[in-house]
Image (cartoon, rainbow, N blue to C red; front, side):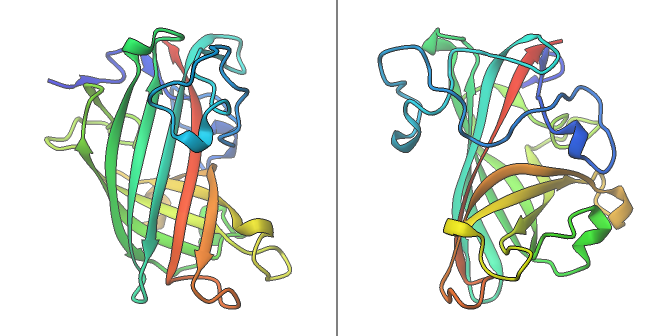
Length: 234
């Protein structure tokens, strides 16, 4: 039986200051994926090679001064010529604060399609791309359930969540962001419905967009992103 995060006394430090509507049990985090490197001299076996010595795995301090543990989510995938997107998103939980035996990784499959509307209605006027996706937990090693993190009040029978991913891929001048770096906003709605039911976290992650046609950003394109948070004991 998986442990609900709220019962496990874990609270994700999200971007409450950047949401369209405040949610409970959240605190501010940078979401840059560039935390200071761990103080442990050995490489962490769970950290992807490109993030060794970049990700912090030995603990963190929230903006309210509480001691916490580090969490990162890292996605890679692509959208095809029809706007159908498929990504693999791994959630890296560094719960041991130096005790690597307590750290673990859960894997989600993120599948969806391009969804065009006025993103400014969700306070994301700078966003140019939106994807309505289903996030399914396909490999669980952490014995956690994610329903409180994805805006649900009740624990579902399966770890499947509907989300909205909004990409800021262009500068204000309409050209691709420098080095293809994009900011990503994430929305949750339970149950999914009117736009007013979505809770959107701006700057939920930062990543890259690599469109096949560099002069025409958007799908078909490859994408990746990294987000981070500080988890604290409630």
